[in-house]
Image (cartoon, rainbow, N blue to C red):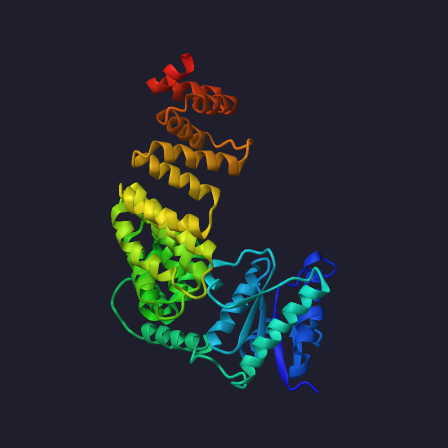
Length: 425
């Protein structure tokens, strides 16, 4: 007989719908088999054995069940609402998402199991992952992992504040009092749960409000994955305060940072320095950060190469070509991708190494194949071939460009005297 309850939070959909069928398959083929040996009774909102289910019943399960399993597939609003309320309790939960789905940014820093129901083997893999996770949780007897203030206690506190404010006679107009009270209560809510307030502001597209909440979120949660995810949104748009938060977290994280989060943060910071024309500062700031990250034990060569190439791009943009060359050589040793070979050609060209630059472009064009049609890349390659006195190769590239966009090619040739001469001969 089951002794514990697991509440399955997932998109349910109408009876007979594809969403309902997918939900049934998840529950019957993965969740129930995974939890059977742990004496769990698996409950889903539409399968609660009573004539009608009200919201209170669901919230009671969200807050009181020994375990919640949350399926983030489809980014369902009700799922996220119940997910947030479970997070507040501090009680154990397991996040799932179907293979191929994009993780929502605000929960992407949390361990999430990817499941795949396409074959018996992949379904069994998900079952084993869930069982391993539950085995870890069972060592603490499914007790709360954080002190986590419950939503009900927070609501009670706010109601007490509201009553107190109602009893104060300020002598001001009612509308002014109401506005001040709303602003004060909004501040209390933000201070009590800045992560939720930040997400709500984003959902409502109140970006200025979300930006104002960000420092509060950082002060409350510290140098964590969640704060880095939040800060990179605004750093990517050129916000200096958000950039500073990203840098502080990357310099001194309070918890192990997920490598994918780090990767996206580096992209956001690169974008910031590009927007403010600060590539020189960016290279100086990111150099030690990136080199520290590539020494991690959990990073693969492809990701190392990607991060180092980002540093190389900042060095190139700020005119530090010798240093950029050193970095791109490391990049290609880790992952000899076509784009990195192309970047090496651009650096060799800037350093006046004409023959090497042309040879790099030979390798690049061989790797990408005859169908390659990126106009700007081909234009740069034509110029590099011309500088290396490889006129026939330069003409072939110009002819290819003309086949892609005759007007732009004519304008490009007209803008460069050496190319006009080349095409006339």
